[in-house]
Length: 132
Image (cartoon, rainbow, N blue to C red; front, side, top):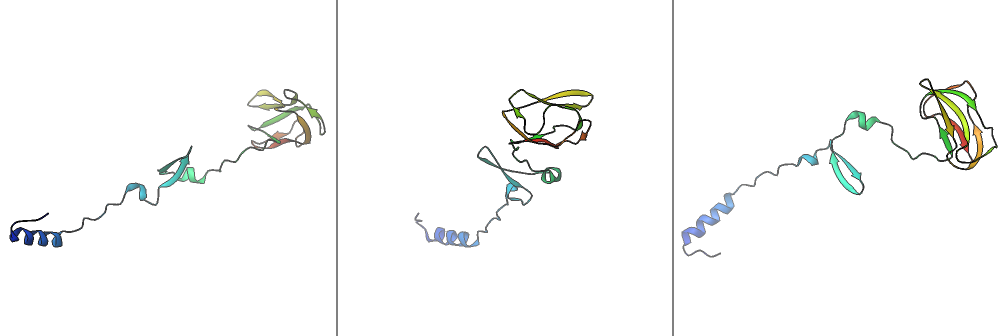
């Protein structure tokens, strides 16, 4: 850009030298409290709570273990170690919250160990039996 008058050039030169830089405003998402999360390949920055940060991390279930899904009492064990089982076979009867639940075999296999006895009270997540 060329100016015709020398006054304009001088005023432009002064203006560019005296122009102050505006401070860069930090983005909210750059705050250190924000955590990066990836959900189905998409990245998100979000705030989390202390409760969320202290929770037990999820781990993939082990297919060869049968765990109790709720605390309760073993009423009857229908199989013993070394038995061959097929899907739908009765493994045991488990009482929880005054209801008797039939625990059925989810897939074919051989019972490796049984960690419970009839009448035994077990907590949530207890390994009831293991498959080979």
